[in-house]
Length: 274
Length: 346
Image (cartoon, rainbow over all chains, first blue to last red; front, side, top):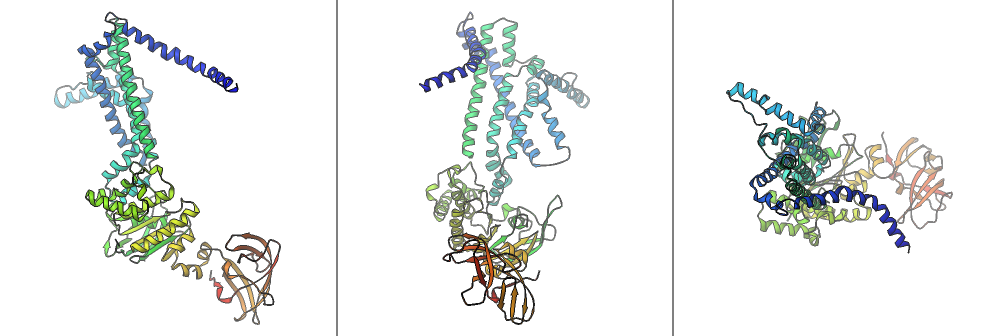
């Protein structure tokens, strides 16, 4: 009897959260899934992602770009984060401040910064013009996007790495060294495994952010199609709502899968780390 | 598998940290081959710094030199010194199994797979943890972890074994068991061992010699027996075991104290000395004794510890046999022998 009352109470308490979940998550996703299947091609909109070269190439390009940005960010941040955590020097706080600055910029501003750096009137262009006579411009290519994404990915990852590096047990490194391990071996066998959970989780966030980044792509992408841009043009220019919806779902699915995978991997490595 | 012991010599080894703190005053020290030397002292006395200098984790200030046998290892970093280390926090690699941890040093040295397996099995057996070989570290108890840490350190046949408070994180019973085991292990292997602790019971049980340290300096070096019975100064006397202070006056063959007199065979004059609790006895009826009142009595099982006032200027700690019925408020008569007194110069 009291059990039943408790269950009713629980259901009542859960109701608001459930309502929000249905209203803001299930319904829109459901609508999206329906919209994707209700175009002239029906369910074939999904197949078009693979058969239509434009969609397929943009999908592959987006995944490759995001993966590349993620790997580069992780490599950079593991080194810099460890260094910043372990060394105290004048200007350290300022340096950390500068490195985390991009957190406060919207994507459009990051895109703008890349144009100022590598655009037609950019710094690199002027420099190369003066030095070699030909202007190096890469702001509007994949390279420009890569730089922009890297720029706004670094702060998220470096802060996580620093927090994790702070918790590493220095005794482990000393134990490994006493057993004869070189700096390289200590890094490979002790430091990186210790940072792994942090690298996995921040790497997954970095990948997800890059997959869905729009502002920077919108500012820079005149020659390139990344998935969010394709969705935008399908939706606004071609009014191909079904295709836009199908692409949106695929984009979400890939990102979600990577996040889930990273969470599982990080979870098991955390468990192993005891 | 006896590892021939290495003799260690430190000459003029001081350590000043980057922020200017002097952790260690210049130290000259010789550790005999195969000896277990215990560094004992309160935290901040420089004992761990000395261990880290020998390990190669810290460099001594200029002029300091460290020799293993006749080899000058001062400039060698820890990874080139072939020392085994055991830490208070175990410091086992969480991403490796028990066997993986023990095999790590051998792997780094590129010992062939078959030989490596054999050594790991041997180490597991020596530490009696064979059944734990495939466990992950987080499945082990503290005592098991420290056994793995010992096995890992010894697997590479180090020249010196360095133990930094290895038992401090364990609970009392386990600490004693593992202490006995470490003692047996060190004797059997004949390895030179440096053991750092703040626990005087551990130091006495394990050390061939003890180095008592205070404020970056050596207060006394000696066998446990000498340190306990003939402490060099008040700091050592206080730090090792409990100590009572006596101050009285010898007159006409009698030692006069607030609690009465004892027949005394020394020239007249004031007497300043210290006395261990177990050196004080309850006087037999009819024999001379000093009268005092028991303030508190703690029954400890193997003995009872009394706090007695009125006998000497300060209350005395007395270890009495466990069979005598005594409680707080009782009046007791105490006596002691002249040769149990520890002269204190300062």
